[in-house]
Image 1 (cartoon, each protein chain N blue to C red):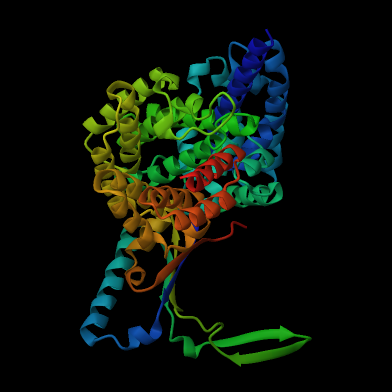
Image 2 (image 1 turned 135 degrees about the vertical axis):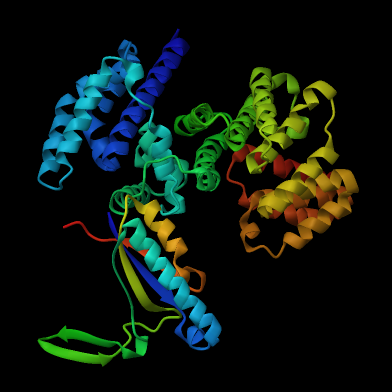
Length: 416
Length: 115
Protein backbone atom coordinates (compact mmCIF):
# COMPACT_ATOMS: atom_id res chain seq x y z
CA UNK A 1 0.00 0.00 0.00
CA UNK A 2 2.82 2.37 0.89
CA UNK A 3 4.45 1.78 -2.52
CA UNK A 4 1.20 2.87 -4.23
CA UNK A 5 1.09 5.98 -2.07
CA UNK A 6 4.68 6.78 -2.97
CA UNK A 7 3.98 6.33 -6.67
CA UNK A 8 0.85 8.47 -6.45
CA UNK A 9 2.77 11.18 -4.60
CA UNK A 10 5.58 11.07 -7.16
CA UNK A 11 3.09 11.31 -10.02
CA UNK A 12 1.30 14.23 -8.38
CA UNK A 13 4.60 16.02 -7.93
CA UNK A 14 5.46 15.44 -11.58
CA UNK A 15 2.11 16.83 -12.72
CA UNK A 16 2.59 19.88 -10.50
CA UNK A 17 6.03 20.52 -12.00
CA UNK A 18 4.84 20.16 -15.57
CA UNK A 19 1.80 22.38 -15.12
CA UNK A 20 3.93 24.97 -13.37
CA UNK A 21 6.44 24.87 -16.23
CA UNK A 22 3.72 25.35 -18.80
CA UNK A 23 2.53 28.50 -17.03
CA UNK A 24 6.05 29.86 -16.53
CA UNK A 25 6.66 29.39 -20.24
CA UNK A 26 3.39 31.16 -21.12
CA UNK A 27 4.22 34.20 -18.98
CA UNK A 28 7.94 34.32 -19.79
CA UNK A 29 7.43 34.03 -23.54
CA UNK A 30 5.23 37.12 -23.44
CA UNK A 31 7.14 39.27 -20.96
CA UNK A 32 10.68 37.95 -21.62
CA UNK A 33 11.10 38.08 -17.84
CA UNK A 34 11.68 34.52 -16.65
CA UNK A 35 12.43 35.44 -13.04
CA UNK A 36 9.25 37.52 -12.75
CA UNK A 37 7.17 34.67 -14.20
CA UNK A 38 8.64 32.27 -11.64
CA UNK A 39 8.03 34.73 -8.80
CA UNK A 40 4.42 35.23 -9.84
CA UNK A 41 3.78 31.48 -9.68
CA UNK A 42 6.03 30.58 -6.75
CA UNK A 43 3.41 30.52 -4.01
CA UNK A 44 0.88 28.63 -6.12
CA UNK A 45 3.54 26.08 -7.08
CA UNK A 46 4.59 25.56 -3.46
CA UNK A 47 0.96 25.08 -2.50
CA UNK A 48 0.47 22.50 -5.26
CA UNK A 49 3.59 20.57 -4.22
CA UNK A 50 2.26 20.42 -0.69
CA UNK A 51 -1.38 19.71 -1.54
CA UNK A 52 -1.59 17.43 -4.59
CA UNK A 53 0.54 14.48 -3.37
CA UNK A 54 -1.68 14.36 -0.30
CA UNK A 55 -5.11 15.08 -1.80
CA UNK A 56 -4.79 14.14 -5.44
CA UNK A 57 -4.26 16.05 -8.65
CA UNK A 58 -7.08 18.47 -9.63
CA UNK A 59 -8.94 17.95 -12.93
CA UNK A 60 -7.48 21.15 -14.37
CA UNK A 61 -4.05 21.57 -12.79
CA UNK A 62 -3.22 24.80 -14.63
CA UNK A 63 -6.49 26.44 -13.61
CA UNK A 64 -5.82 25.46 -9.99
CA UNK A 65 -2.38 27.10 -10.13
CA UNK A 66 -3.70 30.27 -11.74
CA UNK A 67 -6.48 30.61 -9.15
CA UNK A 68 -4.10 29.91 -6.28
CA UNK A 69 -1.65 32.40 -7.72
CA UNK A 70 -4.11 35.09 -8.76
CA UNK A 71 -3.10 37.66 -6.18
CA UNK A 72 0.62 37.23 -6.86
CA UNK A 73 -0.01 37.47 -10.60
CA UNK A 74 -1.85 40.76 -10.20
CA UNK A 75 0.77 42.08 -7.78
CA UNK A 76 3.48 41.24 -10.26
CA UNK A 77 1.73 43.32 -12.90
CA UNK A 78 1.34 46.21 -10.49
CA UNK A 79 4.99 46.11 -9.42
CA UNK A 80 6.23 46.25 -12.97
CA UNK A 81 4.21 49.39 -13.66
CA UNK A 82 6.74 51.54 -11.87
CA UNK A 83 9.71 49.93 -13.59
CA UNK A 84 9.08 49.84 -17.29
CA UNK A 85 6.61 50.59 -20.01
CA UNK A 86 5.47 47.02 -20.43
CA UNK A 87 3.04 47.14 -17.47
CA UNK A 88 -0.17 47.10 -19.47
CA UNK A 89 1.25 44.25 -21.47
CA UNK A 90 1.87 42.21 -18.32
CA UNK A 91 -1.67 42.88 -17.05
CA UNK A 92 -3.07 41.73 -20.35
CA UNK A 93 -0.96 38.61 -20.18
CA UNK A 94 -2.22 37.75 -16.71
CA UNK A 95 -5.79 38.33 -17.83
CA UNK A 96 -5.22 36.19 -20.94
CA UNK A 97 -3.96 33.46 -18.69
CA UNK A 98 -7.00 33.60 -16.43
CA UNK A 99 -9.37 33.47 -19.37
CA UNK A 100 -7.55 30.50 -20.81
CA UNK A 101 -7.63 28.71 -17.46
CA UNK A 102 -11.23 27.70 -17.93
CA UNK A 103 -10.19 25.42 -20.78
CA UNK A 104 -6.84 23.79 -20.08
CA UNK A 105 -6.25 23.06 -23.76
CA UNK A 106 -6.55 26.77 -24.53
CA UNK A 107 -3.25 27.56 -22.83
CA UNK A 108 -0.71 27.26 -25.61
CA UNK A 109 2.42 25.25 -24.90
CA UNK A 110 5.32 27.69 -25.05
CA UNK A 111 7.81 25.39 -23.37
CA UNK A 112 9.69 24.73 -26.61
CA UNK A 113 10.10 28.48 -27.14
CA UNK A 114 11.33 28.74 -23.54
CA UNK A 115 13.84 25.92 -24.10
CA UNK A 116 15.22 27.63 -27.19
CA UNK A 117 15.70 30.79 -25.14
CA UNK A 118 17.45 28.82 -22.39
CA UNK A 119 19.79 27.12 -24.87
CA UNK A 120 20.52 30.26 -26.89
CA UNK A 121 24.21 30.63 -27.88
CA UNK A 122 24.38 33.82 -25.82
CA UNK A 123 23.68 31.82 -22.65
CA UNK A 124 26.70 30.40 -20.85
CA UNK A 125 27.07 26.71 -21.75
CA UNK A 126 27.03 25.50 -18.16
CA UNK A 127 23.78 27.32 -17.48
CA UNK A 128 21.63 25.89 -20.28
CA UNK A 129 20.63 22.48 -18.91
CA UNK A 130 20.12 23.85 -15.37
CA UNK A 131 18.02 26.70 -16.75
CA UNK A 132 15.77 24.31 -18.66
CA UNK A 133 15.37 22.11 -15.59
CA UNK A 134 14.47 25.05 -13.39
CA UNK A 135 12.12 26.89 -15.71
CA UNK A 136 10.23 23.94 -17.22
CA UNK A 137 10.13 21.70 -14.15
CA UNK A 138 10.60 24.00 -11.17
CA UNK A 139 13.64 22.29 -9.65
CA UNK A 140 15.50 24.54 -7.22
CA UNK A 141 19.15 25.56 -7.51
CA UNK A 142 20.20 23.22 -4.70
CA UNK A 143 18.66 20.15 -6.34
CA UNK A 144 20.09 21.01 -9.74
CA UNK A 145 23.46 21.87 -8.21
CA UNK A 146 23.72 18.55 -6.45
CA UNK A 147 22.85 16.71 -9.66
CA UNK A 148 25.63 18.47 -11.56
CA UNK A 149 28.06 18.41 -8.63
CA UNK A 150 28.09 22.20 -8.35
CA UNK A 151 27.72 24.16 -5.11
CA UNK A 152 24.16 25.49 -4.62
CA UNK A 153 25.30 29.11 -4.35
CA UNK A 154 27.30 28.82 -7.58
CA UNK A 155 24.37 27.21 -9.39
CA UNK A 156 22.03 29.85 -8.03
CA UNK A 157 24.22 32.70 -9.32
CA UNK A 158 24.55 30.99 -12.67
CA UNK A 159 20.79 30.76 -13.03
CA UNK A 160 20.19 34.37 -11.96
CA UNK A 161 22.78 35.66 -14.45
CA UNK A 162 21.30 33.61 -17.26
CA UNK A 163 17.76 34.86 -16.65
CA UNK A 164 19.00 38.44 -16.50
CA UNK A 165 20.80 37.96 -19.76
CA UNK A 166 17.66 36.61 -21.43
CA UNK A 167 15.82 39.73 -20.35
CA UNK A 168 18.45 42.41 -20.90
CA UNK A 169 20.02 41.12 -24.09
CA UNK A 170 16.64 40.52 -25.68
CA UNK A 171 17.06 36.81 -26.27
CA UNK A 172 14.01 35.78 -28.27
CA UNK A 173 11.47 33.17 -27.23
CA UNK A 174 11.09 31.71 -30.65
CA UNK A 175 11.53 28.48 -32.53
CA UNK A 176 14.37 29.44 -34.89
CA UNK A 177 14.08 29.59 -38.66
CA UNK A 178 15.21 26.71 -40.88
CA UNK A 179 18.93 27.50 -41.18
CA UNK A 180 19.36 28.19 -37.48
CA UNK A 181 16.97 25.50 -36.28
CA UNK A 182 19.35 22.58 -36.59
CA UNK A 183 22.20 24.20 -34.67
CA UNK A 184 19.94 25.71 -32.03
CA UNK A 185 18.01 22.48 -31.64
CA UNK A 186 21.31 20.68 -31.06
CA UNK A 187 21.91 22.96 -28.07
CA UNK A 188 18.45 22.20 -26.67
CA UNK A 189 18.95 18.47 -27.19
CA UNK A 190 22.42 18.62 -25.60
CA UNK A 191 20.89 20.26 -22.54
CA UNK A 192 18.18 17.63 -22.22
CA UNK A 193 20.75 14.86 -22.62
CA UNK A 194 22.98 16.47 -19.99
CA UNK A 195 20.07 16.43 -17.55
CA UNK A 196 19.25 12.82 -18.41
CA UNK A 197 22.87 11.66 -18.12
CA UNK A 198 23.18 13.19 -14.66
CA UNK A 199 20.18 11.21 -13.54
CA UNK A 200 21.35 8.02 -15.17
CA UNK A 201 24.65 7.70 -13.36
CA UNK A 202 22.58 6.53 -10.41
CA UNK A 203 21.13 3.34 -11.92
CA UNK A 204 19.79 1.93 -8.69
CA UNK A 205 17.86 5.17 -8.36
CA UNK A 206 18.67 5.31 -4.71
CA UNK A 207 19.15 9.06 -4.62
CA UNK A 208 15.69 10.50 -5.22
CA UNK A 209 16.78 13.71 -6.94
CA UNK A 210 19.06 11.96 -9.36
CA UNK A 211 16.46 9.37 -10.28
CA UNK A 212 13.99 12.14 -11.15
CA UNK A 213 16.36 13.68 -13.65
CA UNK A 214 16.50 10.58 -15.84
CA UNK A 215 12.69 10.38 -15.95
CA UNK A 216 12.37 14.10 -16.50
CA UNK A 217 15.07 14.03 -19.18
CA UNK A 218 12.97 11.49 -21.05
CA UNK A 219 9.84 13.55 -20.47
CA UNK A 220 11.54 16.66 -21.93
CA UNK A 221 12.73 14.52 -24.85
CA UNK A 222 9.16 13.36 -25.45
CA UNK A 223 7.94 16.95 -25.34
CA UNK A 224 10.43 18.08 -27.98
CA UNK A 225 9.80 15.03 -30.16
CA UNK A 226 6.06 15.69 -29.98
CA UNK A 227 6.43 19.38 -30.84
CA UNK A 228 9.05 18.80 -33.57
CA UNK A 229 8.08 15.43 -35.04
CA UNK A 230 9.93 16.06 -38.30
CA UNK A 231 13.28 16.72 -36.65
CA UNK A 232 15.19 13.42 -36.80
CA UNK A 233 17.68 14.41 -34.08
CA UNK A 234 14.86 15.03 -31.62
CA UNK A 235 13.56 11.52 -32.33
CA UNK A 236 17.12 10.18 -32.16
CA UNK A 237 17.72 11.66 -28.72
CA UNK A 238 14.52 10.18 -27.34
CA UNK A 239 15.43 6.79 -28.82
CA UNK A 240 18.88 7.02 -27.21
CA UNK A 241 17.47 7.83 -23.78
CA UNK A 242 14.84 5.09 -24.00
CA UNK A 243 17.49 2.52 -24.92
CA UNK A 244 19.67 3.56 -21.99
CA UNK A 245 16.76 3.56 -19.58
CA UNK A 246 15.55 0.16 -20.84
CA UNK A 247 18.66 -1.43 -19.36
CA UNK A 248 18.40 0.22 -15.95
CA UNK A 249 17.13 -2.95 -14.29
CA UNK A 250 20.01 -5.02 -15.65
CA UNK A 251 22.92 -2.79 -14.63
CA UNK A 252 23.09 -4.15 -11.12
CA UNK A 253 22.84 -7.73 -9.90
CA UNK A 254 20.87 -8.88 -6.87
CA UNK A 255 23.70 -7.91 -4.53
CA UNK A 256 24.06 -4.46 -6.08
CA UNK A 257 27.16 -5.42 -8.04
CA UNK A 258 27.96 -3.74 -11.37
CA UNK A 259 27.07 -5.75 -14.47
CA UNK A 260 28.77 -4.61 -17.69
CA UNK A 261 26.66 -4.41 -20.85
CA UNK A 262 28.13 -7.52 -22.42
CA UNK A 263 27.16 -9.61 -19.41
CA UNK A 264 23.66 -8.25 -18.85
CA UNK A 265 20.76 -10.59 -19.31
CA UNK A 266 18.43 -9.26 -22.03
CA UNK A 267 15.54 -10.75 -20.08
CA UNK A 268 16.05 -7.94 -17.59
CA UNK A 269 15.83 -5.23 -20.27
CA UNK A 270 12.56 -3.35 -20.74
CA UNK A 271 11.34 -4.70 -24.08
CA UNK A 272 8.61 -2.10 -24.51
CA UNK A 273 11.06 0.79 -24.14
CA UNK A 274 13.37 -0.84 -26.66
CA UNK A 275 10.50 -1.35 -29.10
CA UNK A 276 9.50 2.29 -28.77
CA UNK A 277 13.11 3.38 -29.29
CA UNK A 278 13.35 1.26 -32.43
CA UNK A 279 10.18 2.77 -33.86
CA UNK A 280 11.52 6.28 -33.23
CA UNK A 281 14.85 5.44 -34.82
CA UNK A 282 13.14 4.09 -37.95
CA UNK A 283 11.02 7.22 -38.23
CA UNK A 284 14.14 9.35 -37.82
CA UNK A 285 15.98 7.38 -40.48
CA UNK A 286 13.12 7.86 -42.93
CA UNK A 287 13.54 11.64 -42.60
CA UNK A 288 16.97 11.28 -44.16
CA UNK A 289 19.12 13.62 -42.07
CA UNK A 290 21.65 11.73 -40.00
CA UNK A 291 23.05 13.30 -36.85
CA UNK A 292 24.89 12.60 -33.62
CA UNK A 293 21.94 11.40 -31.54
CA UNK A 294 20.64 9.08 -34.24
CA UNK A 295 24.09 7.51 -34.54
CA UNK A 296 24.37 7.07 -30.77
CA UNK A 297 20.88 5.55 -30.68
CA UNK A 298 21.79 3.25 -33.57
CA UNK A 299 24.75 1.91 -31.56
CA UNK A 300 22.39 1.18 -28.66
CA UNK A 301 20.03 -0.46 -31.12
CA UNK A 302 22.77 -2.85 -32.24
CA UNK A 303 23.53 -3.74 -28.63
CA UNK A 304 19.84 -4.26 -27.92
CA UNK A 305 19.57 -6.68 -30.85
CA UNK A 306 21.34 -9.21 -28.66
CA UNK A 307 17.92 -9.96 -27.15
CA UNK A 308 16.95 -11.46 -30.51
CA UNK A 309 20.18 -12.68 -32.07
CA UNK A 310 22.08 -13.65 -28.97
CA UNK A 311 25.18 -11.85 -30.29
CA UNK A 312 26.57 -8.39 -30.95
CA UNK A 313 27.22 -7.09 -34.46
CA UNK A 314 30.57 -5.45 -33.72
CA UNK A 315 31.39 -4.52 -37.35
CA UNK A 316 28.16 -2.51 -37.43
CA UNK A 317 29.07 -0.80 -34.17
CA UNK A 318 32.57 -0.02 -35.44
CA UNK A 319 31.09 1.56 -38.59
CA UNK A 320 28.68 3.65 -36.53
CA UNK A 321 31.48 4.89 -34.28
CA UNK A 322 33.56 5.73 -37.37
CA UNK A 323 30.71 7.95 -38.53
CA UNK A 324 30.22 9.42 -35.04
CA UNK A 325 33.89 10.21 -34.72
CA UNK A 326 33.97 11.86 -38.14
CA UNK A 327 31.03 13.98 -37.00
CA UNK A 328 32.09 14.94 -33.50
CA UNK A 329 35.84 14.28 -33.02
CA UNK A 330 34.84 13.48 -29.46
CA UNK A 331 37.47 11.66 -27.37
CA UNK A 332 34.69 9.74 -25.65
CA UNK A 333 33.52 8.46 -29.02
CA UNK A 334 37.13 7.57 -29.84
CA UNK A 335 37.29 5.37 -26.76
CA UNK A 336 34.13 3.51 -27.70
CA UNK A 337 35.42 3.18 -31.23
CA UNK A 338 38.63 1.65 -29.90
CA UNK A 339 36.64 -0.96 -28.01
CA UNK A 340 34.68 -1.85 -31.15
CA UNK A 341 37.87 -2.04 -33.23
CA UNK A 342 39.33 -4.44 -30.69
CA UNK A 343 36.43 -6.76 -31.53
CA UNK A 344 36.65 -6.41 -35.30
CA UNK A 345 40.38 -6.01 -35.91
CA UNK A 346 41.95 -7.37 -32.76
CA UNK A 347 43.11 -5.99 -29.44
CA UNK A 348 46.23 -4.37 -30.89
CA UNK A 349 44.14 -2.19 -33.22
CA UNK A 350 42.00 -1.03 -30.31
CA UNK A 351 45.05 -0.30 -28.16
CA UNK A 352 46.62 1.68 -30.98
CA UNK A 353 43.64 4.05 -30.99
CA UNK A 354 43.79 4.41 -27.21
CA UNK A 355 47.52 5.08 -27.36
CA UNK A 356 46.93 7.97 -29.75
CA UNK A 357 44.46 9.42 -27.24
CA UNK A 358 47.00 9.47 -24.41
CA UNK A 359 47.95 13.00 -25.41
CA UNK A 360 44.41 14.30 -24.71
CA UNK A 361 44.60 16.26 -21.43
CA UNK A 362 40.90 15.81 -20.65
CA UNK A 363 41.28 12.04 -20.56
CA UNK A 364 43.84 12.01 -17.76
CA UNK A 365 40.92 12.14 -15.31
CA UNK A 366 38.37 10.21 -17.34
CA UNK A 367 37.68 6.82 -15.72
CA UNK A 368 36.19 5.09 -18.78
CA UNK A 369 39.41 5.71 -20.72
CA UNK A 370 41.52 3.94 -18.13
CA UNK A 371 38.97 1.16 -17.66
CA UNK A 372 38.87 0.55 -21.42
CA UNK A 373 42.65 0.66 -21.62
CA UNK A 374 43.00 -1.73 -18.71
CA UNK A 375 40.56 -4.18 -20.27
CA UNK A 376 42.36 -4.24 -23.61
CA UNK A 377 45.82 -4.46 -22.02
CA UNK A 378 44.62 -7.38 -19.91
CA UNK A 379 43.38 -9.16 -23.03
CA UNK A 380 46.68 -8.56 -24.78
CA UNK A 381 48.54 -10.15 -21.87
CA UNK A 382 50.33 -6.97 -20.73
CA UNK A 383 49.63 -7.70 -17.07
CA UNK A 384 51.82 -5.01 -15.48
CA UNK A 385 50.48 -2.25 -17.74
CA UNK A 386 46.91 -3.49 -17.25
CA UNK A 387 47.41 -3.44 -13.49
CA UNK A 388 48.53 0.21 -13.60
CA UNK A 389 45.62 1.17 -15.83
CA UNK A 390 43.16 -0.53 -13.47
CA UNK A 391 44.68 1.39 -10.59
CA UNK A 392 44.13 4.68 -12.45
CA UNK A 393 40.56 3.72 -13.27
CA UNK A 394 39.79 2.67 -9.69
CA UNK A 395 41.20 5.93 -8.36
CA UNK A 396 38.95 7.93 -10.70
CA UNK A 397 35.72 6.07 -10.01
CA UNK A 398 33.26 7.55 -7.53
CA UNK A 399 30.60 4.83 -7.63
CA UNK A 400 31.32 2.03 -5.11
CA UNK A 401 29.75 -0.74 -7.23
CA UNK A 402 31.82 0.12 -10.28
CA UNK A 403 34.92 0.50 -8.15
CA UNK A 404 34.40 -2.97 -6.69
CA UNK A 405 33.99 -4.40 -10.18
CA UNK A 406 37.25 -2.83 -11.36
CA UNK A 407 39.02 -4.09 -8.26
CA UNK A 408 37.79 -7.61 -9.02
CA UNK A 409 39.02 -7.33 -12.60
CA UNK A 410 42.37 -6.14 -11.35
CA UNK A 411 42.65 -8.96 -8.83
CA UNK A 412 41.80 -11.46 -11.57
CA UNK A 413 44.93 -10.31 -13.45
CA UNK A 414 47.17 -11.69 -10.79
CA UNK A 415 45.12 -14.85 -10.60
CA UNK A 416 45.99 -15.62 -14.21
CA UNK B 1 15.45 47.09 -28.79
CA UNK B 2 18.57 49.11 -29.44
CA UNK B 3 21.94 47.44 -29.73
CA UNK B 4 25.47 48.71 -30.28
CA UNK B 5 27.61 46.72 -32.69
CA UNK B 6 31.27 47.32 -31.77
CA UNK B 7 33.63 46.43 -34.58
CA UNK B 8 37.01 45.10 -33.47
CA UNK B 9 39.85 44.47 -35.90
CA UNK B 10 43.60 44.09 -36.01
CA UNK B 11 44.85 47.49 -37.18
CA UNK B 12 48.31 46.26 -38.10
CA UNK B 13 46.87 43.65 -40.42
CA UNK B 14 44.47 46.16 -41.93
CA UNK B 15 47.34 48.62 -42.57
CA UNK B 16 49.16 45.92 -44.52
CA UNK B 17 46.16 45.21 -46.74
CA UNK B 18 46.57 45.62 -50.49
CA UNK B 19 44.81 48.61 -52.06
CA UNK B 20 42.40 46.36 -53.95
CA UNK B 21 41.41 44.52 -50.76
CA UNK B 22 40.99 47.81 -48.92
CA UNK B 23 38.70 49.19 -51.60
CA UNK B 24 36.68 46.00 -51.62
CA UNK B 25 36.24 46.31 -47.85
CA UNK B 26 35.07 49.91 -48.15
CA UNK B 27 32.62 48.93 -50.85
CA UNK B 28 31.30 46.19 -48.63
CA UNK B 29 30.78 48.61 -45.77
CA UNK B 30 28.93 51.04 -48.02
CA UNK B 31 26.61 48.27 -49.16
CA UNK B 32 26.14 47.04 -45.58
CA UNK B 33 25.25 50.46 -44.26
CA UNK B 34 22.85 51.01 -47.16
CA UNK B 35 21.17 47.66 -46.44
CA UNK B 36 20.64 48.71 -42.83
CA UNK B 37 19.11 51.98 -43.97
CA UNK B 38 16.79 50.21 -46.40
CA UNK B 39 15.71 47.85 -43.64
CA UNK B 40 15.05 50.83 -41.39
CA UNK B 41 17.21 49.53 -38.55
CA UNK B 42 20.14 51.92 -38.45
CA UNK B 43 20.20 54.56 -35.70
CA UNK B 44 23.84 55.63 -35.97
CA UNK B 45 27.18 54.43 -37.24
CA UNK B 46 30.73 55.71 -37.66
CA UNK B 47 34.21 54.53 -38.37
CA UNK B 48 36.81 55.61 -35.84
CA UNK B 49 40.27 56.96 -36.52
CA UNK B 50 43.28 54.77 -35.70
CA UNK B 51 43.54 53.78 -32.02
CA UNK B 52 46.74 55.80 -31.70
CA UNK B 53 44.65 58.95 -32.08
CA UNK B 54 42.84 58.13 -28.89
CA UNK B 55 43.38 60.06 -25.68
CA UNK B 56 42.40 58.78 -22.27
CA UNK B 57 41.04 60.98 -19.49
CA UNK B 58 40.80 59.99 -15.86
CA UNK B 59 39.96 62.15 -12.87
CA UNK B 60 41.49 60.93 -9.60
CA UNK B 61 41.87 62.80 -6.29
CA UNK B 62 40.44 65.89 -7.95
CA UNK B 63 43.25 65.86 -10.53
CA UNK B 64 42.63 65.35 -14.19
CA UNK B 65 44.98 62.92 -15.90
CA UNK B 66 45.35 62.96 -19.65
CA UNK B 67 47.11 59.96 -21.11
CA UNK B 68 48.12 58.80 -24.53
CA UNK B 69 45.52 56.34 -25.90
CA UNK B 70 44.25 53.82 -26.63
CA UNK B 71 42.42 52.70 -23.48
CA UNK B 72 43.86 49.19 -23.60
CA UNK B 73 46.57 47.42 -25.54
CA UNK B 74 44.73 44.61 -27.23
CA UNK B 75 45.25 42.27 -30.16
CA UNK B 76 42.23 43.80 -31.89
CA UNK B 77 41.21 47.44 -31.61
CA UNK B 78 37.87 49.21 -31.74
CA UNK B 79 37.53 50.44 -35.31
CA UNK B 80 33.95 51.62 -35.49
CA UNK B 81 30.39 51.06 -34.35
CA UNK B 82 26.76 50.92 -35.38
CA UNK B 83 23.66 51.48 -33.28
CA UNK B 84 20.66 49.59 -34.57
CA UNK B 85 17.06 49.21 -33.49
CA UNK B 86 15.73 45.67 -34.03
CA UNK B 87 13.23 43.22 -32.55
CA UNK B 88 15.53 41.00 -30.49
CA UNK B 89 19.05 39.68 -30.01
CA UNK B 90 18.82 37.23 -32.89
CA UNK B 91 18.03 40.06 -35.29
CA UNK B 92 21.03 42.03 -33.96
CA UNK B 93 23.28 38.98 -34.28
CA UNK B 94 22.09 38.48 -37.83
CA UNK B 95 23.18 42.03 -38.75
CA UNK B 96 26.47 41.59 -36.89
CA UNK B 97 27.24 38.48 -38.91
CA UNK B 98 26.77 40.45 -42.13
CA UNK B 99 29.16 43.20 -41.03
CA UNK B 100 32.29 43.09 -43.21
CA UNK B 101 34.40 43.46 -40.05
CA UNK B 102 33.12 40.12 -38.75
CA UNK B 103 35.22 38.24 -41.29
CA UNK B 104 38.51 39.78 -40.15
CA UNK B 105 37.91 40.43 -36.48
CA UNK B 106 34.99 40.36 -34.08
CA UNK B 107 31.77 42.23 -33.48
CA UNK B 108 30.55 42.69 -29.94
CA UNK B 109 26.78 43.07 -29.70
CA UNK B 110 25.48 44.78 -26.59
CA UNK B 111 22.05 46.11 -25.75
CA UNK B 112 21.67 49.78 -24.92
CA UNK B 113 20.36 50.21 -21.41
CA UNK B 114 16.71 51.18 -21.39
CA UNK B 115 16.46 54.25 -19.18
